[in-house]
Length: 147
Image (cartoon, rainbow, N blue to C red):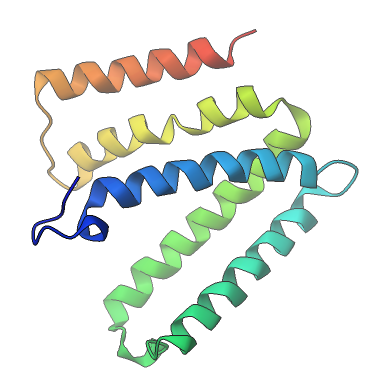
């Protein structure tokens, strides 16, 4: 789990595992947080927390320079932000209506869609074993979610 220069925190796998851990906690905390409130309002509150936390982090580390981003980057980050917002709105609505243990696996079908979109739009290639893994993820997500 060491990165290219041997540093533990330079490994993408460490960050991916941390991401998965925080995503799991997100589902649990959000499920409790949306009880008895409008799911869209809850999404806004969560978004504000993310914005403030990231702004403070960037300011504290001297990296808050939005003008440094080129126009193409802004365009795709705006699209990504809109997709994130739509995803969060749908996710919180799903959590309000369903069980976290069912919603989260279906949400993780995004892994399958990323593989498909990466191949179709980014020219990424996956081996037969990779596609088998994608199929297993899809199957597993459905099996975990079905009651």
